[in-house]
Length: 155
Image (cartoon, rainbow, N blue to C red):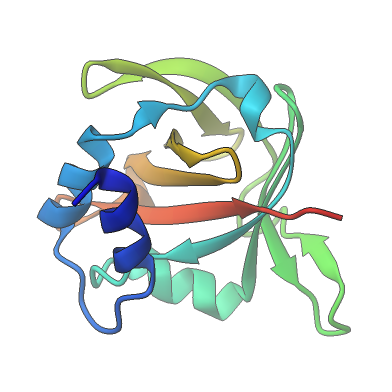
């Protein structure tokens, strides 16, 4: 089975997903590049039991918006009126995109402005990326990273 098939199977998995499986899928993907992330992306979380998943549910997380390398909304959420809003309070501001080395590869990486948190991205296909949250605080839960995916929203 290819990494892409494993990835799509895991996004549909119900119940707990082992982070080791996600690490194996991650290792088989190619790094994302900054220019590939432009636009609005709908997100989803792999159920590894990481506390960030529950927090994102509480925030009514929708995804992320990349308008340019220095113009990123890291926490796009569904507001009370159903409209998409950037939750600057929970994200402690906005974010930027950089090329950062992670696990021996340089990946497009979103850096939060107000938190010591990095989201590293690898390409599944032109419209899907896998992300790993890294850093301090919410990023690690009992030493485990938070794993998620983003799908490009086409207008």
